[in-house]
Image: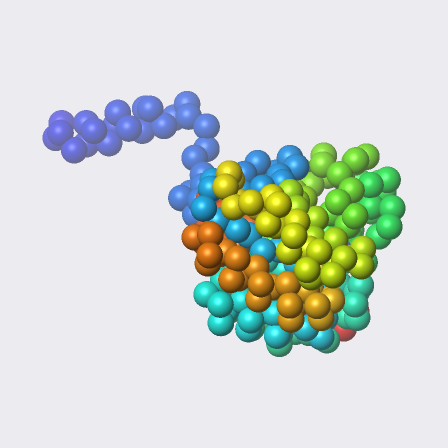
Length: 253
Ligand SMILES: [Zn+2]
């Protein structure tokens, strides 16, 4: 017996009783933070993950452009229908995705009772948006932020089943609660730039957040030597933000 065939025979013998091995691409996509556990901040210092909820909306393109011009990557937690139908901002979403910003899920309709919905209804909220995102950007996200940051009831177990990394925040900019950009800025200044990177809660649906707070944050990050990265990047998961999914012929909500 040649050495090579001996080697092959012994490898076969080893493999015969082994569990199936994931291919390398699947392994890479499964790396990164665990699904179904609440994540509030980055896994290392020296970074800031600007994260915006509730779009897409009329400011999506401008926000993506502002971030790109500032050398920043941002994360957009988008819904299907909250501020108009997602297909109405198809081009802006595609542009944001192509520019390297992260597109993540904020559910299909942004239900007020997200934390008390059944597993079936939660799943429907997620899969409807997945289908639309596959139709628009070609992939489905593995990161989500629950509406109202609701993580109770069946939310975490369902997100685990669906493979979603659940993001909340460690600084609430309060733009949804009528805080002015200056009041939000004071929160960042008070929180400081040391420690693991922040994942703030902000909303791309306010012009003040897009036009005033975001440029200030880009400058604040530069002043403090923070790298402006996506949520997936700030969690050491730069290639894990998306997986393949199944689209449809749908073009409206
Ligand atoms: Zn929201």
